[in-house]
Image: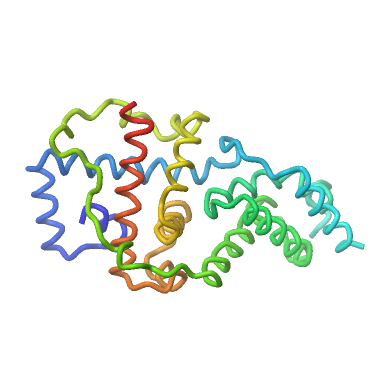
Length: 74
Length: 186
């Protein structure tokens, strides 16, 4: 349910029960916090990818694409 | 394309140098295989060349190219569906140490924007993502990277909403465990 609530609106009774449980259960609260971090980090990573991600398009592939683009342009 | 756009944007021969790496990095985060990522980027540039007269400069050229690439990736997922196995739909909060969870380190509180600036963290994150079963990775990628809603993801993957929620739950649980072991609790 901790994961599912990130993807859809749970029925209100379930939402209430989950909130009460997270208030009382420290371990589940920790798990929920960590799952939240996983989500947020992933979203930030996805939008930050171009500058931070170390992979590059291989040089040979770049040349292949450039050749294909110039054939297509002419 | 109009004459109001910078010369670099109007010249396709400069697109690869200006945007090739950015598109590749976008793709590799979503498809894992570098060869496939390269194919998708190549297809994107070729499609963009055919459609360039339709680019009016309302958004940046890179945003436009990323939009084309996003659709290429979704099409790839549709055409090459992964069978969801019974084993993909089982399991709970795997690896969560219920006995010692109150020992959460402060590393979990580090701002996401700072974490992703760290190249070592990038390596750990991409490695953890690569460790997910393919079906889970696609579901997670569409939900968390691209913000697609459940209904759209179900159509692309050919799964029921219930299956999707289980797959996302398992993906998050496995990623949590992997990041904990390789970064946050190291």
